[in-house]
Amino acid sequence: MTRYALRRLGQSAVTLVLVSIVVFLGVRAMPGDTARALAGEETNPKALEAIRHQYGLDQNIAVQYGRYVEQAVTGDLGTSARTGLPVVDAIFEALPVTLELALLSLLLAVVVGIGAGVVAAVRRGRPAEWFANTLALLGLSVPNFWLGIVLILGFAIAVPVFAASGFVPFGTDPLENLRRMVLPVVVLGSGLAAIVMRQTRAAMLESLSADYVRTARAKGLAPHQVVGGHALRNSLVTVVTVLGLQLGHLISGAVVTEQIFVLPGFGKLMIDAVFTRDYAMVQGVVLFTAAGYILVNLAVDLLYSVIDPRIRLGGAP
Image (spheres, rainbow, N blue to C red):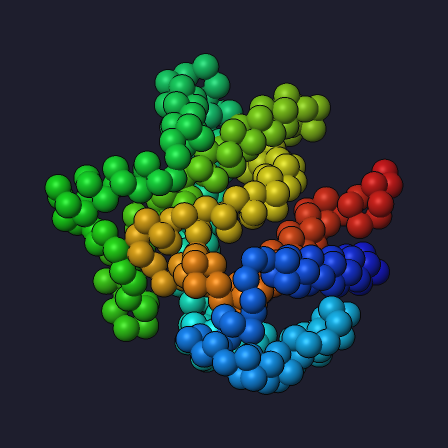
């Protein structure tokens, strides 16, 4: 297990370095002058030259990248051209919002998706399966922005149960926090829940027809022991894999969802940075998000190897 974990950790580190190179070069390829963006309204050529020298923009691209990596390792991702504050401060200010949205959406997807998938498989050919399949189809078909608008009109305006926009930290007011997060979580988590449900159902149907399940039934085990202790446990390998592959959807969906509900998270931070040509902020947010994505994928791979030990043994039987 330790050897497998170290190998995956090394692969993740290499991936992060490659991502940092792509992000760095991509930001440098964006139209506009970085020095002018940092200078704001200052157009004096000498002032611009001083800014280029201060931030190393007058050096070759390799030296600039080396300096950027050196600063990033110490936690310095640059200074925002829009606010004049460190990029790291803005990232950690927005992080709790996006993190709460993503974690609650993931929890919703896991609980609802796995639960509905198990019910659909166990109750195959019955109304429960039809109902679960119908909900999954709706979850996959309805775009996030359209679902968000419908939920706002229905549950924040017509029947004002939940708030339509804004964010209140959980530590400040837990009830108000949940009131404002329910709709965004439903919007972001519904599509992922539908995917998890369909994959769980397919994996469960395969497991329920396997020899080891028939043997468990022949031994006289209770239905919940057969389903939970045998069929579901072996089906979780597929479910965990799907969750890992869908993390990108969760991140991109969070950007759209935060714009709909005016949540001050990574999505709003990134959009504002792009429109104001805040290159340091764009670079910092993308790199931080990529690092988080890589770390979560690493955790999913390690969890995968715990569920199915053959993974860490290279597929050996």
